[in-house]
Image (cartoon, rainbow, N blue to C red):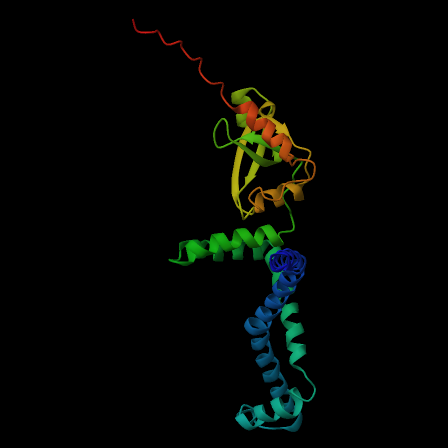
Length: 262
């Protein structure tokens, strides 16, 4: 009875954990992003807005600028205006507005050139050049407006003959390869496990690929799980696995008849 309860507890606990984790992790990521914006951008926007309010009060009441920058005035703004009216949220919202404005700037012609120059310096800095490219790759995959266009899921022999990998067809091969090889080529992205945002891009002949009846999500789940999460309809039954194993067994070598010694 104890073993039965322990087995049931483990099974249903893992099932409940698997059901809860996606929602909890999603919520945690959202909270982390909001905290990051608040702690690294919002707090400075808050100080900047408070400074503007102090200058405005000094102009309205005719307070000298030297007195307006004093700790007494800042304390008055912070304790008698900021906290009672909960204006901290105004600065938090302004932080998102500033991120939006920065995004518009980076999307412009001058902004792209400026940010490209900044990124080149990141790629040259010690330590930073080891971290920044990987972080940029992940953020571009998650946040880029132009997502990777995938036409279908295929299996291809990679990294060598006899080893089959699941890949995503992202387009046709390069013109130079088409002209040099004279064949119908396709470009395939081979995602790696357990992080499918990284992988390898290869070009193979279309005839050397096998179309798989899988969706993009099925292929990514298969890759992330290391092949544990098998797409529906693709898993073999125990009987089929045993039969394949028996068919693959080599035939025993013929036994020679022993000659009797005289």
